[in-house]
Image (cartoon, rainbow, N blue to C red; front, side, top):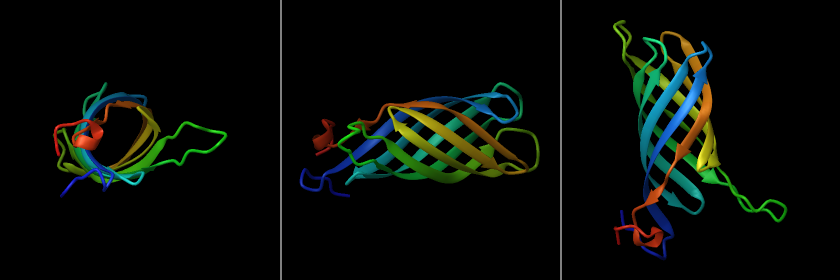
Length: 147
């Protein structure tokens, strides 16, 4: 992949952390890291993360491709927000036979995101929370080390 100033592409990585509450009342903590490409107000990335629960048997690792966009600025609203979704796979950390589940997410925000996740495996589990991310550009256009 070639990055240049003319292409307006930004390669980035984005560490983050979320705190959420699932439908069973458990508090979930989730560090994550995303690697992606932003171009023309659109982004695509791959996110790797870990979800730990306040109760046993609800923790997992996940890998989730995500896509999204940045809203266009409007005259009455100068703030732009990101919104997107992801669909991936989770590896469950318990002693039961089913180790794989599907994971999806919806998110919106800028720096601080409202995030909803869905885990579909032996049972459905959803959570809603807040996620803080720090996108770090890697190419020269974004003040990073890659030309």
